[in-house]
Length: 67
Image 1 (cartoon, rainbow, N blue to C red):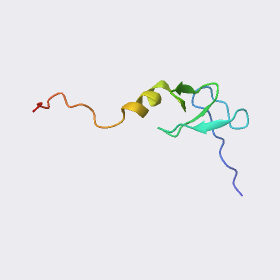
Image 2: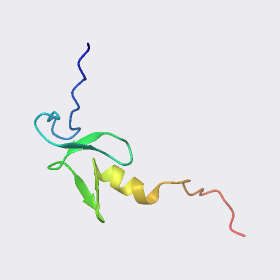
Image 3: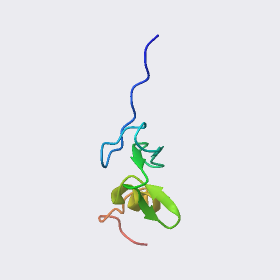
Image 4: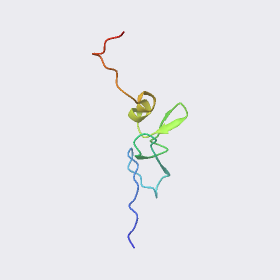
């Protein structure tokens, strides 16, 4: 029987034996409560994922002509 690989916090490197880890809702990376970035009632692995949660979608096209 093979053993399950350890999950590791992307911020501090703690394993799931050392801290309770949860997956980021955006990138699915694991993070612990100490490294969590809190934004409007949610927890993310980084400020980049927190921003992407609200601004995900098609980027603005600067070359588009407004009608």
